[in-house]
Every structure is written in C-alpha cells, then in structure tokens.
Length: 282
Image (cartoon, rainbow, N blue to C red):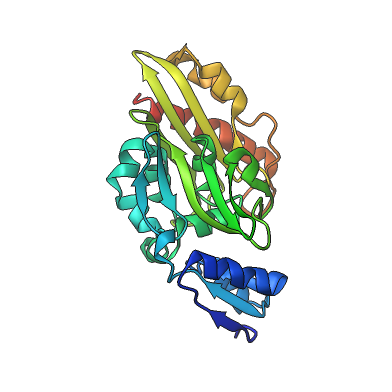
C-alpha cells in the first residue's frame, strides 16, 4: 500500500526540528531510522501531514563518556551501539540486547532512540535501559528535561515525550565490571520476543552483591523483576532458582497466538533463572 501524501522536512539542527514540530503539532510525525514509522505509514495506520526527518542533525548521533555515565545519542544506529567498546565496557547489558535486535539490515537503519521512543513492550531495548536505571533527555520549546526510565514508559506505545518534544539522548549510569546477559525466547529467528529477560549482576566472590533485572513483553511497558532483585541481594548462586520463581510477580503479560499470559509468566521465571546465572558467570 502507498502512504498517504505528506510534506517532508529535514532540519539540520535540533532547534530547527523543535520549531517545526511546535509549528505542526499533532499533524507531524518524527522520522528517526524509520523501521517502525514507515510500515505504519504504508499500512495507513497513521497519516501525518508532515514528516520531520532527524537524520541530518549530527548532534543527535554518537556515544560519549561523561564520567559516571555513558551517553547515547537518540539517532545513533543500533550497529554503532553494538560495536562500541565504551558501551561494552560500562553497559554490557545494552550490548547484549542490541545483538538480539532484529537483523543486520534493521540494526544498520534503526536508531537507539527511535526504538525506545516507539515504546513497543516487545522491543528489545526498553527492559535493559530500565534495568540499568537509564535517563532520557528530552528537548522541547520550554527547554531540556531529564526523565528516569521508571517514568519514561507510560503505557502501550506511549512515553513521557510530549507532542512538541524530541528525545535527544539516553544516559546510562556506568555498570563497569557487572556481568550481563539478555535471554530472549522466540519461535523463529529475528522475531519480536515472546518473552525476554535482561539481567545484570554484580558478583562478590561466590555470591551476588546486587542484581538488576528487566522484563520484556510482560506488560504494556517494560518491567523490573523487583521481588527477584530483592531476593538476590547478598545471596549465593544457590538462591537463584527460588528468587527467579518470583520474576513474574505483579506482571500482566498479553495473550496472543504466541502464548497466553500464564505461559509467558512461566517463561519469565525460567528465563530469569537462566539470565541471572549467565550474568553471574555460572
């Protein structure tokens, strides 16, 4: 199907992009890598009057070290995140998750910020960023504000980004030396995860000093396995199975052709055990 007709804008600065978005309001859509927006336009599930392409704004792309955090520009392609030694060293969970995201072609076109702003609960990046206590930097006519990951994902395909705002970068607190693993369950390669678990672990000898765990596709937004995290703090590896049994506590996963809610809750418990043990190097 051919998309409905729209005007195309390609600003070269963030200020120009914010001004264009403010001018056109609800009639405009932001284009990042296009891997989510273009299929929607082709199926005419959305018909904006204006599409604002952020691809010509260099300040929105790149990865940098800011002391206690690494910063990933919203327009940074997934393949650059995957190849980054900075990310691998200080946010290994992001590296682990990006390697499972779609296929090579999508990772070259899709962007880190675009995937997160799309807020698909089955997306592979939300749970890792949530688990790492990431922060989202958002710019609009009123200036720049920072939103913690715990408040960024509001609902199904809904975030804290307002209609006249643009996600500019994502700040990830450094987790240097933490083990990490992304356990993804799919029926076929490159599929959206039926369930996935993002786990990062700070090991202390034979025990777990701290664990952070994010759940993918277990609700309308990415979720933390808080009960499991609490049970693992200071515990030995032998406590992992019992702690993982609480991974699905408080979740409301969907039921669809890939599995019902009860099946997904079972998967979450099994995958959490695997992910935590792998992250701990067991």
